[in-house]
Length: 210
Image (cartoon, rainbow, N blue to C red; front, side):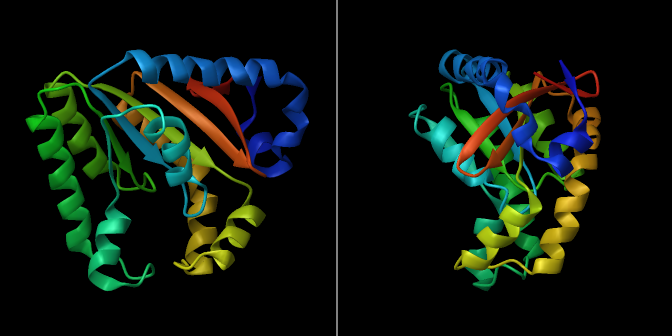
């Protein structure tokens, strides 16, 4: 079933709850992938406070022993101690680190690059290096209703400027297509993270599908 991106983001996931079985099938597809596939690069994308890191911890870190997460914001925070100040050097460091990890690892790790997904050129550099080293590349794009992201941000000890958060939230939907065309992942998952529930979809042929 093809879904409207606008419906998903602006009218809420509750309209699709009766079809949980189909959503669960997509999540099962991902679980099979993460349990069987090695030398896997996961590009984890989404606006601030969408729940990307939480999705990583629940669906990847808890299930894969040799997963590695690289997050430019975490590296930046080490330098600045301020989530609203992004140190450019941190992005370069995270890119270099990711390229080095996919080049140097001789085992079969799951590497997660956790960012907003807007820095497409840097992400493509990492992906190109990963493919040179026989990595299977997927994208997981995480979304949450704007009201929830704002509330999470207000409760967080590391607050993001609210105007910036809203701006990125509005741009995130259009970024699905941009990322897909630039990266051409083997598989592209969309996760709606709302009210402590996660709803899994796939992005195929420029459509969000169940």
